[in-house]
Amino acid sequence: METRPYGTTGRTTSIIGLGGAFLTASSFADGVATVRRALDLGVTYFDTSPMYCRGASQAVLGEALEGVTSDCLLATKLGYFSEPLRFHSLDALLTQFGENLRLLRRDHVDILQLHEADSHHWWSTDTALSGRLDKSTDYEFASAPALAAMSQIKQQGACSFVGISGNTADNMQRVLEHIDVDTFLLAFNYDLIRRGARRVLPIAEKKGMARMVGAIFQRGLASSQPTFFDTPPVWMTPKLLEAYRTVYGLQEQSGMTFAEIGVRFMVAQSEMNVIIIGAKSPDEIEECVRAAEAGPLPPEMVEQIEQIGLET
Image (cartoon, rainbow, N blue to C red; front, side, top):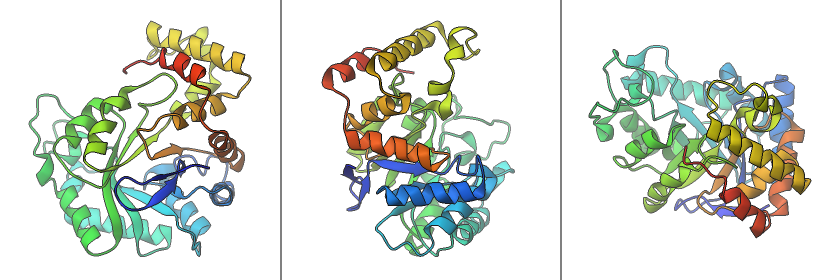
């Protein structure tokens, strides 16, 4: 499997990373087996968060990676507080990080990120607003307590690199333009159809950040819902529906699985250092690793898919 530099950190990583959002979909034991199968296959990047699997994801990785001495990168996050003002509390942030380490069974992680940094609560104490960044609010991004907390944790040697993650390209671009961190993760914005990440990843690259993309299968919606064509969900616009029809047609003609065509298209792109796969089982991570090992799609197929792309 291909490896790529992890931004300008001096580290390298497998192009495929394992995301921890669905590790306990079947059972805790299956989650541990999935992580260990990923290790066997050469995966060296692992991503988790306190909110994944209602907190169990970190415990799965803690058990599966305990005693592992290979050169892996482990990333976790801060966030998803029940009270908005905890996003601005140094005590709350440090307490959560300490719990992360306990569940991960270690005294250090490689990467610590703000979870969904495109959320209003990270950057403002105005509790009258919630959700994503407010377009009319002038945020003081660089002075946010969360950035100071991550900097303190890094200075103390409890993490090697700090970064941000998020799900909306326009909001993450806004944050990126005002802060400097080591790593950047954007989910739901780069796959066979969506190209929104292409507006943002060059900014992260220019700043020397390690660049990751996630949710390239849209939590499974992209590959397992042919019923879209009969009863499209409310969020699916006519333009998006037509893009899905075209992708399904290409996939059927190719003889590849949806996972293979999706991974191999992403491997053909150079903008990111890691493609994070939210696998639920050993079989799922193996299918994606084998696809990556097969290399990029043929150039003519990449070009066909490029014609489908939507700047969503």
